[in-house]
Image 1: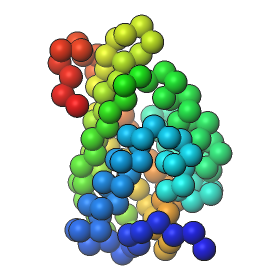
Image 2: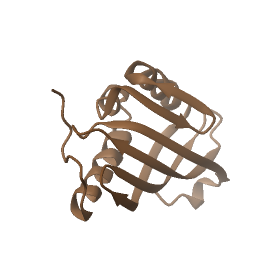
Image 3: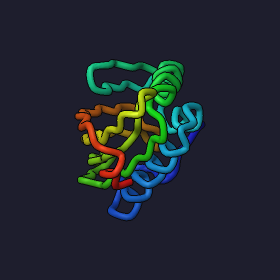
Length: 136
């Protein structure tokens, strides 16, 4: 059986570890690596897009990082309980035209007993920024 440590139920230390592992994976910009943290039938809502399963996750992230260049993400633990974690995050990127953006958002995560994320709900807003205003 596939497992992704740490496993729920989470405490402060293990919830922070899970958030850092997610941040590291997303900053790798490797869709296959990221997808392995999710159940094979994981449910996502990312902005107005609904995604189901690892195959769709890989397709979604591949397309995302083909458009979002120099992507850099920072996640912060907001709250946790049992098998759920809430995070706030921000990331920066530029599009093909060289316009920079900072995205702000919140995610709610639910994990199965093997530490794989089975649900991810993300609300995200983008803010156009000047390259000189980058923080990450």
